[in-house]
Image (cartoon, rainbow, N blue to C red; front, side):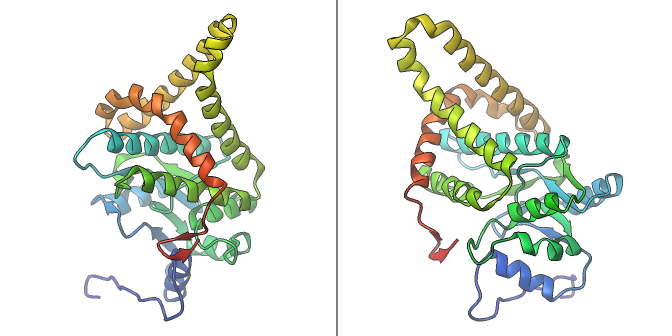
Amino acid sequence: DKAGFKCLDLPEGHEGKKEAIAFALSRTSTPWVLQTDADCRLGPRLISSHLHYLSEHPSDLVAGMVTSKKGHGGFLEAFERLDLLALNGTGAASFATGRPIMCSGANLLYSAALYRDTRIFDPAGKTRSGDDMFLLIGARKMKKKLAFNPHIDGLVSTTPSGSLKSLIGQRIRWGAKSGSYGMADIQSVAVMVMAVNLLMLAIPPWVILQPEFSPWLLAGAGMKILADFLILAVTSHKTNQSGILWWYIPVSLVYPLYMLLVFAGLFKYSSTWKGRPV
């Protein structure tokens, strides 16, 4: 309290991040909310970075970059960090077009008024998570001003999943909520990403069975790999993680199989996480 912080406990019978956010906002009169996750680490200039960016780009919501914390190294750690960097790059680019398609609740600054106004777009009774995306979707539908802070001072580090099973499970949870978004461009991008990665898996046997198509198939695969690399080169540079690009080729070879596992997992998705409905 002396430092200006309060830790609130959810009342008995309430649980989950959405209810925690709603409870916190009901107990404060602040006009702005800086949202992160309990397992994240914040830089010393995170708040000043977001506020400075907000002053230069007046908005109702400012999203920031999220990366995974460095651990013992290895393929899985590199895989998850490159995956997050790709999501950051895609998200930042979509904000630049004026039609943002993703953001992370681990790093958001938004007005309390925006939160209250967008509750009608959040199917809280149907899905207990997805607070970030339903906030973004509501803001878009209300034609609010949205911005993305690309500066490294506004970066948040999150705890890595720790295992391939946990990572795949997290991505399945993210994908499972897309059916409730009610926004065609976001849902079509998700379908397109999945379809392209499944197509990448089909290219090797296709080349073997029909070698006459190999120049076109290999050219298409090369363009996809190059486009992904360029996105990762930009985001890894902005986050001072360019060294992670050494893992790009092995990660890119495994990534389509990973997406296949996520896609398959959507068909037997369980709507619980950590013992709670999501």
